[in-house]
Length: 298
Image 1 (cartoon, helix red, strand yellow):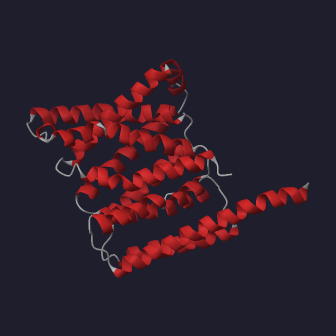
Image 2 (tube, one colour; image 1 turned 60 degrees about the vertical axis):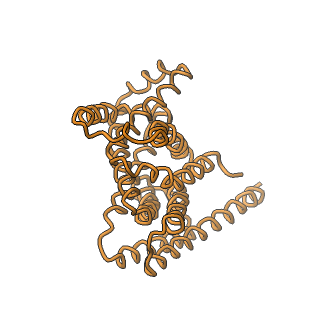
Image 3 (cartoon, one colour; image 1 turned 45 degrees about the horizontal axis):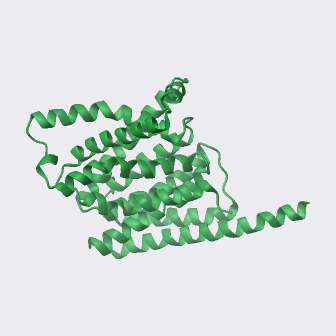
């Protein structure tokens, strides 16, 4: 039976995979302004959830433990950087390169799991890891330039996943701390923008304004799912499941927004998809063998 954490991870990555369509609707608003409102409405959303559950007392007690604020301060910085790069890239027609970044990210997560957390791969799991690495190296070498967007996204979110794996708070409390760290800079920036007459949001249509106001809910749902998954399943499995999001992003970039893709890029993507299929099949076969092993031991 598939673990609950696995379903959480799958749901989070599917949502992240289709989000380029959502953020693309806000292309007429500067990315930094979008991020500012996204942080504010995310903070409001999490606060309302805490109020509804009457969890403020437990929350305050939880964040006073040693090292908690430092850990989540780092996490908030990493996710803030990731959001800014991602939305900027989406609205500058680099959806395919963002998908490349999130294809690199799972490989990085696997390596972090093995090197930092001492997680072990089964011998057959090294085959898809090698295939994925080959695809990433091939795409990077044949890209024609250093894919800074892709590499920045991979590094920022890979490290964020590592920090969340070692975090002690439940997902809701963690998100509250993260959005709290980012709240004040966001408010200050938007106030300055408003007084300088450079704000764009309120000058747009009702639909655009509504999408910005809903960005808090849109942001929080997959992050809650991801945070829960990170504490329930291994970082290695998280790393492999992350291929779902960039695959969907790739499809959206190519077939919906008609971004160009070279033959070299396509070869790299095929290697990565082969890695994902192999890993899933290997996991399925291994899960079927476990009950048999238990029966034999009995």
